[in-house]
Image 1 (cartoon, rainbow over the protein chains, first blue to last red):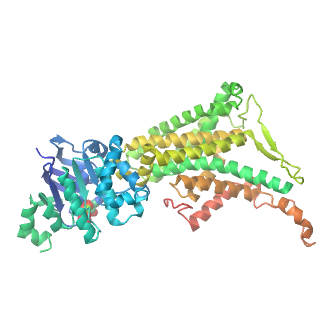
Image 2: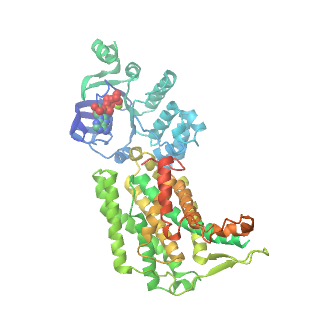
Image 3: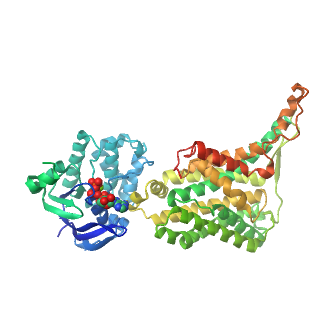
Length: 234
Length: 334
Ligand SMILES: Nc1ncnc2c1ncn2[C@@H]1O[C@H](COP(=O)(O)OP(=O)(O)OP(=O)(O)O)[C@@H](O)[C@H]1O
Ligand SMILES: [Mg+2]
């Protein structure tokens, strides 16, 4: 049974449809990567899965259980974490308070998880008393991912985790994502750096105009000349 | 020396009194704004409502305070705070929540709160009449005269019992609020929601709970501020009329959405008011002899007459919106 599965998902903002029948599925322990041009509906798809957007048709299932249009705070309890593309931290809260909010629904795990996150993202330990809004882009991204990891999710949705980062930080974040995945967390992420992302992906989904254009393993998509020509810049 | 005592009595004491009241009101305005993103115009009426509940209870049990040697009104205040907190949550559930569910623009919420203002004012007048009533029903207001140990100071510093209660209460309220917001899980979640409501929801924070907690804090602080003011002066059904502008000015001066700013803003507005109506001529009297002959010292030298005190917060409001719309502490620009 797939960990996370979406079939024929339609939806959009206030009547205007952005998603016109999207299908995707990832198994436990897999990384799924969504790529596609700007405005294809990649972020919209993640929001639809996380209940931030009304799905008008189709079904989304977590471990086989239907979760279509379930409220985000319920999904967190069911083991799903989400790191939005923008506004993904609490800027006036300190780094540690951001992480504490991540563990809001599991306060008993807070101390243990906090230690793990600091071990995983060492720069955050140093900055733990600083307001998260004052950190650099890469460190903010660590706070954002750290916050989502605090509940020990089974599946993590990441929207462009490397956007705006220097190549050095970018590689570091990709490494972290691989480590998180190796620890048993399923990942569904949107990425602009398509080649690098598909290289670590088990499954790849190329979206355009709110529909799947190509769906295959990451490796197959990377080597597909059609995909390369139209979506990976040659 | 007596001039200094005059200054302390008329500026330091009364500025601190108004400042504490405004601060407690402004905290509510600012918290409601930071969580629900609208200017809650009915806030001053929640202050009146709290004081009205105390008046009602004190009329029913005028003697309870005698048991512990405190004014009955003060002893009954916690009940009124609870009643007002419940009323605030109820008003939210009945009038504001359905609008929020429809994702209306903030201006619609503001208009709804104006409606609540009119409704509360009508209700209070229906029961309390239009005259003013003292909250000291069965007891007398204690007045403390502190004699200064200087030969030249023949006049005492005058502080009343309700003023001392007010100072103590305001300090306790501010410290507890600070501890709540910075230490407790719920307080942090409140700040988180103020920062980023969507992310708060995505973290599993139940935003309905946060909204309710906000109303409980805002409502009970409003009740306390309204009651302590009425205890110092008298209960008036149109109290809110004199409070609305100063508490909004205080919230904006401090930076909207910033609780510590609201406290600072409350004192800025409170002191600005008392300094503006203070008779400066009294302070100049000792050096009157050194003035040139043609300069006659007028007997009253205040910036504005007491009856026009309300223009002071208005001017502060205009000035801050022109020069520093984010307030002292950077708040959200509205
Ligand atoms: N909150 C919103 N309200 C209305 N329309 C929106 C909203 N957010 C996005 N859209 C529209 O939906 C379409 C898809 O947007 P989406 O953010 O999903 O694209 P994307 O694939 O994530 O693009 P990008 O690579 O730029 O992040 C776009 O046309 C966008 O203008
Ligand atoms: Mg996007």
